Image (cartoon, rainbow, N blue to C red; front, top):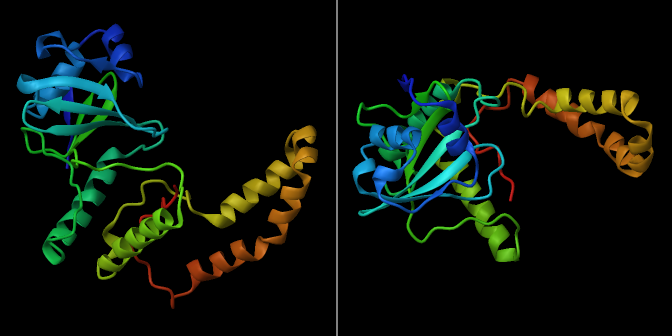
Amino acid sequence: MTAKKFSLFPASVCIFISGRHLIISSPNSHLPDMMQAILNAYGLSNDTTEVVAFGTGLINHTWLVKTEKEDFILQRINHSIFKQPAQIAANIRLIGDYLSTHYPDYLFVMPEKTIDGEDMISTQETGYYRSFRFVKDSHSIDVVKSVQEAREAAAQFGKFTKLLAGFPAEKLHTTLPDFHNLGLRYEQFLDAVKNGDPARIALAGDLIAYLQEQKKIADDYEKICESPDFKKRVTHHDTKI
């Protein structure tokens, strides 16, 4: 999978559209050139009526693209964190194809194809972009306010894992190496305790002591990773609210 590339437009335009607060409610002829090119790549520019910053995510930049027919999510992948965006796209495509084949009734939102049949595009100035159909009447929560919300979130994460129990996990790319490496994180924690700011260390004394008492969790994790008896399987692995 390759990303369609554009090499266009002045830096001032790039700065304008890369911010989190882009709001455009005007005819498509008044869209900034860079955004116009991205929408063109998805065949959306002719009937786009509004582009507005969307959501509360901290890593990627996300916009809601409203058109005369339906709405889409446009997202710029944070290339400084995700060094291989094509691997992310490949993972999503593999999982989406598996779910559509084995569980066609399961709602899994796949990236929209560009008019050239790609899963994403890239611009030389501002990076990689992908688009998804907006799920009507959907919403997300940042903070759990009831037991029912927590139960529903847990049920959906569990269902996702269950449906992918038969998927060959070795086919997926590791897009953030060591991100979930508890052994590494614990070593980083110990280094921070040893070399960190003394005032902060003193302030966090109780928390530091508590975490040191939990070292067995990191040890058990290492044993699990090294054991051939534990099967590698697909999980969402960002299960926070």
